[in-house]
Structure formats: structure tokens, C-alpha cells
Image (cartoon, rainbow over all chains, first blue to last red; front, side, top):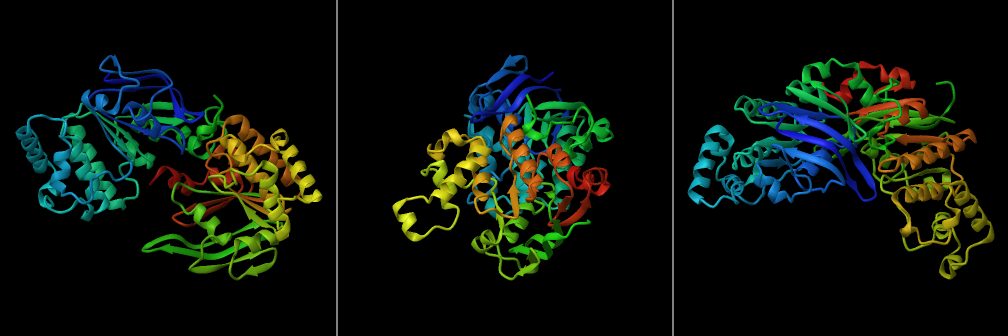
Length: 250
Length: 245
């Protein structure tokens, strides 16, 4: 197992969002987290990448507890986080944005070679190289963000709702990119609002509710599980009853 | 629906630049109900609230409240007419005490405001509400010192000062601990039993399903489904809207 959340508790202010999260993320696979609003999906990613300090529990990455490490240290371990919001520097060129992904590398020649390799892999980087990043469409910017995230050859890539606010056609482009990362042997942890599309693109999935995993399994199996709908729509079954989003009793 | 509509929205439309946030949205809130307005993120729920209460001007469509067409919804006039609302982030005056927060909510003579001299009736009404909401021991505390959940309760109490007929609650339990969720649910039930009508935007679907009837589902700014909680829950289109197609 590349990554394991072990009883992780985290939150903001006085409230806990993650209430004892247990989750396994296997190597060279796509794992997708879905769940209703406030279930803790984004909080799980932020806690993992060091943006939020967990209050309890362990986060084991390659067997080492990385819970509470700074974002820079987490990055140094090989975990990159592509956030929900647009994160390119809009006034910088596409090319400079990609180079920024390698800012922690000492060897500038290696940075350039790596960026050239990524430009081969992501045509948009090559074609729009000298354009300002802010001039690209939302979907194109997301692809450049993904290219930038690969500069450091990460062991684990975190995507927080990469298709948020994108047109259906563009969404397809993002899922295609995720599929290519998978084919190239990358490990991806994906948070997705479009539960069906996310689970369909994933080997493994977990449905979060109230800061814990309510159901986990193969992506395809979860898609067919009636409890998935109940968790979103407040079903009457034992899994969903009384557990509405972040307000479920601990 | 058997009972008459207290609030009706017809053909509401709102565009922000090229984005149509609400499109030809028609629904009604029957008198005496706790009606839910739900839908996935970005489906237009809060925009509908803002249109109904005059915080945004609709590009098209009409709103009728208590049998009268509201030509230009205006928050203050609607408040006086008996339609009031809360916000996702409670809007309170942090430097005023809880009692003062409640009292400033209703119309005061200018002199009263300047002298901060609260009329006896208003004061007793404020205390009554604070008692009901379990906040009476904090009556003279600064509202800014309250917890997040208590601020939501205070805002809820404040909108009741004018004895409204219809209260719009925008995510009353978001970010609130389970004990406070139960307190808010109880208040809504009790007030509804006394005849107050509610329109509630809420993401906690378990709460919606046990508290509200009817449930109206928005998707892409328009009404997708409407009905009893069980019917809505079993509607394949609703599931598609939430899980993605």
C-alpha cells in the first residue's frame, strides 16, 4: 500500500470534518473519493498534503508517518496536489508555469529537459508555450496544471475536483488525461463531484460521509451499489440514516 | 398540493454575463409547510433565494407572496410584509448584545436608536425568543463572542422578531455541530406547528428527508423534480443530478 490514512481526525475551528478516516491508496492505480457536500473529501487531500494539520491519527506514506509535515516536506516526499481552484500564474507564460513546477530542483538543465518531455506528452503545453496562462480555457489550464504537477516525477498525484466548472467536453479531456497517467503507471488520488464519472475512471473508490469512509470497493462495484444514492439523497438505510454530511453524529 | 400557496415564483430567470444561473424556474411554497429547496452544488438555490428576497433583481419572472404580486422585491418591504430570511454565513452585529441584535431587527423610532433605549415590549419579546432558543443566559453578551452555531441560532431568532409568515433558511445547519443541528431542527418543527411556513435550502439530506415536505429539486437553475421526500429520493433524474450522468 502506497498510502494509508489511519483514524485521521482533522477540521477547522472547533469542528472536526474528518472523524477517524481510514483509507488505503494502492500503488499504480486511480483511487477516487466521492461523497456528499461536507463529507470531507477536500479536507482529506489538504490534510495529506500538509495544508491542514491532523488532530489525531496517522498518515502512512511508503510506511512512514507523514501526518503534520509541512507542504514543502510532503512535496519532497513525492506527493503533489492539484487544487480545486485554478492555480496557474495567469500573467506568466504556459512554459514558465510548467518550469515553476520544478522550482525545487537544483539542476536547471534537468528542469528544462523535464519540461520539454512534458511538452511532448501534453500538446497544449507545446502549442501554447508562449501564451499567457490566463488566456487558456479552464480545461486547458487544468491540463497545464497537471503537466506542471508532473515536473517533480511525483509518486502520488492528488486531484481535487479537476472537472469542477468545466464543460462536459472538457471534462472528458481531464478524465482522458487521468486515464493516461494511470496507463503510465502513476498513482492518483482523485476527488470528484461527478461521482459516476469519477468512479468509472477509477480502479478503486471510497464514498465518504460525515468524515469517514461509508463504503469502499472497486469503482465499478460502487457504481452499482444502491447505498451510493442513499448517501447523497439521505436514504433510510442504516448506512445513511442520520448521517447527513458533516453533521453526522460522531 | 392541497393548501394554498403562500409564495409563488414563476419563470424566474437570472443571468450573470453569459452564465444562466436560474432559468425559467417555477415553483410554490404551500402555506403551513416546511418546503425544501435542494440540488447539487451550483444548481441555483441561493440565487433563487436572493431573487425571492430582493437581494438580486431577476431578468425575468414574477414572485407573489400572500396573494400579492411583488413587482420589485425589496428586502425591507418584504420583511415588513412577513417574508424574511437567513444567510449561509449568519449576518449579525458582533458588537451589539444579543438583545440589541434582536431589537434592531424591527423598526425603531429614530430617537430610540440614538439613545439605545429599548422599548419594554421589544425587550420582553427579545427575551422570550432568546429563552426559546436557549440563549437567554447570554442575552447581554456581545454577539461576536458566540460560537458559529450560536450565531446561526441568533440570526434565526432575529428574523422572528417581526412575526413573519414565511422564513427562508439558507443552509441552517451547515458547519454546525450535531447537538446544534438537533436544536435548530426542533425550533423549525415547533415554529411550523404554530403555523409558520418555511422554505429551506439545506445540504444535509437526511435532515431534509425527515423534516421537509414537499421537496423541490433544482438542477442547472431550473426545477427538476418536486414531491414527497420518498418520491424525490426515488426519482432517477434526481439521482442523476447528484451523482452526475
